Image 1: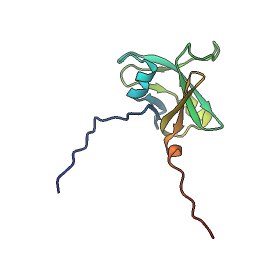
Image 2: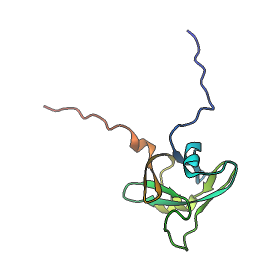
Image 3: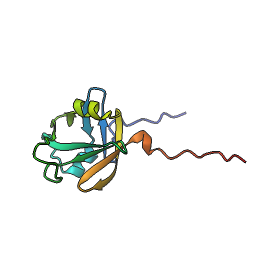
Image 4: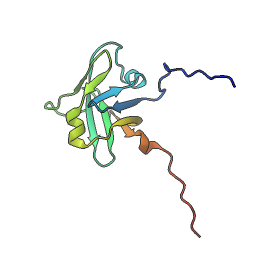
Length: 126
C-alpha cells in the first residue's frame, strides 16, 4: 500500500480566527489578507462579542463607530496574536476556532466552528 504524504504547510482557505488557552486571539492568513494587513507589521482591530449568538466580531479601527473610549486590540506583526484574556473572561468566550460567516455593518462575524457542523438528522418515530 503506498503512503500518501501530508502537507503540514497547507493552511485553511477560509477566513478564520482562533482563541487559545493562553488568552490569545489569532487571525489566519486568509483573514489578514481580507482585512488588508501588511505582512510582518503590527496592527489593531476592534473585537466584539454577541451574547445572543456567541459570535465574535472583528473590525478595523475607523471602519466601525465604537466611541473614543474603546481601545482596539493590538496584534503583533510576527505571530499575529493579540492578548484578549479580559475579553474571554468577561464574555465567557469558548476556546477554539471560529469561522467567518458574514460581514455586517463593517464587522466581520465569526461563529464557533463546532456550531457550524451540519445539523443531525432526527430519526422518525412512527
